[in-house]
Amino acid sequence: MDDVGFWQAAPSAAAELGGAVDALVTAWSVTSRHAVAVTDEIGLGVVPETASARAFRDTLGLLNQGLAAAADEVYLIVAGLPLRLR
Image (cartoon, rainbow, N blue to C red; front, side):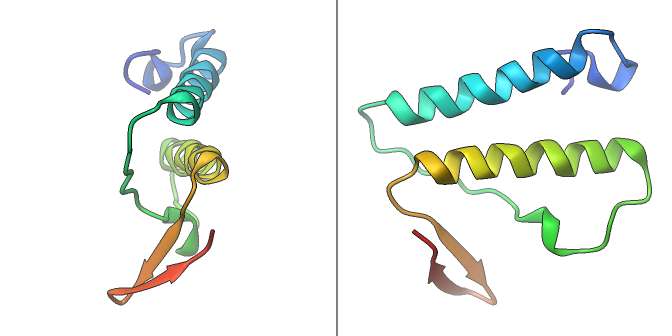
């Protein structure tokens, strides 16, 4: 979000951010390496008060969805207990 000028409301920031998310998901899906991502599941709490926090939550949610769709295995860890989703 910093790299595309999202916080300064650059005109092309949303499109560039979407492209960066797509590029990361594509790289994840085509790599021949074993990759592990650890990320927060931030959509389970309260709705953030500020627009910037909601944008961060939404963007991370889209990234998480894309990575999960491309992954061989997906786990949700709750209270230290793994729940296999995929």
